[in-house]
Length: 215
Image 1 (cartoon, helix red, strand yellow):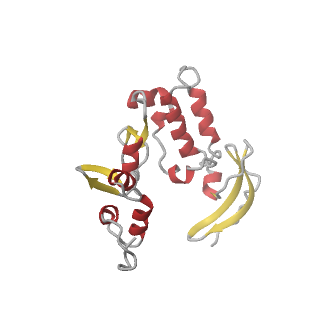
Image 2 (cartoon, helix red, strand yellow):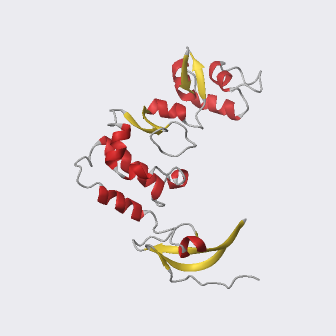
Image 3 (spheres, helix red, strand yellow):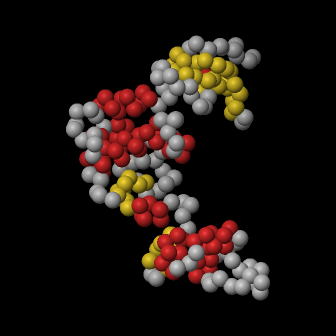
């Protein structure tokens, strides 16, 4: 026997209030609802019935930010590089309005790192010229998966970065082009046309009237 429909409009879950629904999601069972947070933000995604009735979803992300701020307002380090990295990490992972949230919402840090002091204890102070980097980009933030890295190290660590071994050094394709004096735009076009990245960077430009594959 099919269960009785429960209208959740007006129901609160933490700071969230159901304002519209229900909706169906392709390939997902159950009903989903549009919610608005007490802070004034309307969520850009729907919340499942169970998450609302069991109080699993409690805010648009601002509640976690408030808790973090409340627990870390007396340490006197809020303007340091380390604090900025810690705060930015939490914003990316918890604030749906953050431009990078969709890439980090499943990379949630451990509860231990709700405390800035614990983050400092695990990671140490952020060295000049470095920022927080996940060693394995497919895994969440954690003491075991994080390091302070230079911009170059982070570029080489990205899944989308093409890494070449030039002059006995690993470098990005852009850096390789700069090192060898190759036009980066031409190299990118060659790769899109099916060239091996190493050939795209190292092979000289040829006469396009003699060779249709030349770029």
